[in-house]
Image (tube, rainbow, N blue to C red; front, side, top):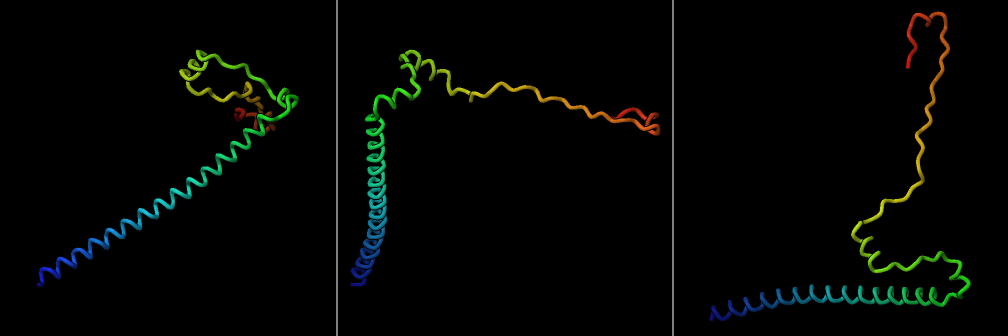
Length: 114
C-alpha cells in the first residue's frame, strides 16, 4: 500500500514538471505569434511604400539619379572586391603656422625657442 502511495506522488511530481514545461512552451508560442504579426505588419508597410514608389509619375522618376544596370559579370567583380572604402574629398596637409617671436635685448644671448 505504501508503495502505491509513493508511486502516485511520483506521478504527481512528474505531471507538475510536464505542466511547467507546457506553460513555458505556450509562452514561447505566444511570443512567436506576436512576432509573426509584427513582421506581417512591417511587410505590408514595405509593400505599400514600394507601390507608392513604383506608381510615381514618370516626371518625378526622371529627376531621380539614374544608374546603369550592372551586368552579372560586373556584380560578381564588385562582390569579389569586397566593400568599398568611403569616398572623401582629397585632403590638404595642414598649413604650418610658425610663431614669430621678437627677441628682446636680454634674450639675444639665448637661442630662439622652437
